[in-house]
Image 1: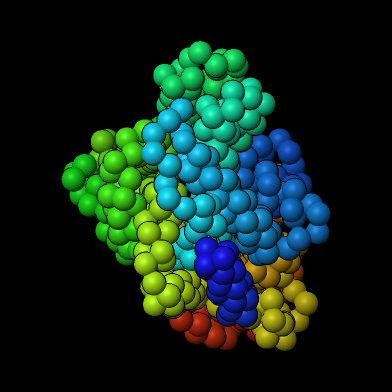
Image 2: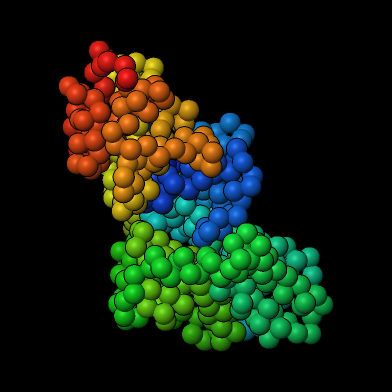
Length: 491
């Protein structure tokens, strides 16, 4: 009963935090979010964009389906991730139950039946799961599928039912099209199945997830002539560092975002010290679910965009073991339960309390004000030019479009050596045109542009020349430049 009550409290706290995030207009967790939402929008309009140069298409495909069903671009990511959060909680609870049923054919059984409920509660109480689950990132859907895969593997090891392994293999294949980190589990999955279940029927099914990475590389080869283009792109964007520094960053993120899970997992391992096979099963779970995180450590590659999120697979991998530790704490006294309940609510609150790891919050403010209609009088029904600087992340210009949702009234402006490239967001392939700086006024009037959101002095100077007498409204570090209503028509 205590464990179920803990899950109920965690679920209520998680739901309250989600409502608060929506009320505050928090839709993004990092600068990757709005660009993913925009890619999904393009994919929903043109399926030929399915094979990109770097990102796996599984998650943008889900967002595209959500948008095609009528969910707005800004809400599609949080909706998909919210569903995935529920799936992650269910899958983690199911995996914890399998680990409490004499895993690997024997060994001592943990002295409680509460770990499945507590594992699900720890998922919902995780600040990092909350933040990632209220975003357009692929971490939570990938984690849910990966945990479901390992759940299927251990269910097959206990029952011998090939259907369980088949379901797990299908889930892992799907995860491998969500995040590259899942590829580590794809490599270890058949090895573990053959090692622990070589005498069981259907072990060959564990090789099926390998088809997902192979298929992606084949598509990359067909589209770009390079089966490892995604790797080359990622390596070019990653920042080289010492493996010790990268490992330290992972450890700091785990301590900053999941201290309770780390401590409880250590206590859970101590409680299982006499149950060799049970503890070994948990160690295998940790190895499978966190396998994709370690190559970047070995190679010394530091992720530049919200790197703390890369500790999430490690946290998720430790949760079943942490549930064992939490069960031991709660079994001691009611005071322990009250303390755990208070800690749960406090932990969930940490998610909304932390600002999003974004580089251009001013553009987010503009997008929100556009969505609320506050800036519409300045546009007077016209279009908005949005600067798209080359040396800045996509967060700014993409977030304006995602939050406003009026792609037909936006023109991207990318600086070129001798002018500006104007791009229609609804048709980035054919809707491109490069104009000289001296012809900018005519091009903007032709497209019905009434105002421009700028983030660099160069763009403001170009607009000042194109629109003499234009009014600039400072918003944070940027400025909304409004074309004079009486500006003469271009010659």
